[in-house]
Image (tube, rainbow, N blue to C red):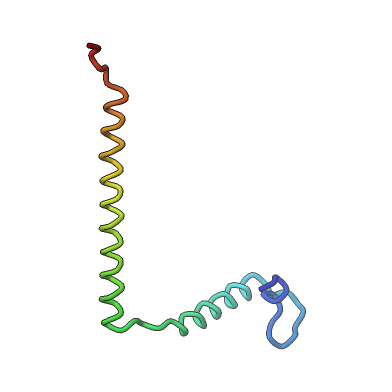
Length: 84
């Protein structure tokens, strides 16, 4: 949306709206968008929740493995090895 479309009202009025007019326009647009929101069904909510929990567990596993591998690598790299 361009600035001119945001400033102009629907009836072709060219005058800029004042500070409070822009605030009320914003609030009307927010309410209009919130009316479009659809609440998920119980089964969808459970499905989405399980997907998120599964994804978080996978990411935790990856981070744990990387932390362990990089930690062991830094220990091997930075500790003094006795020469034989």
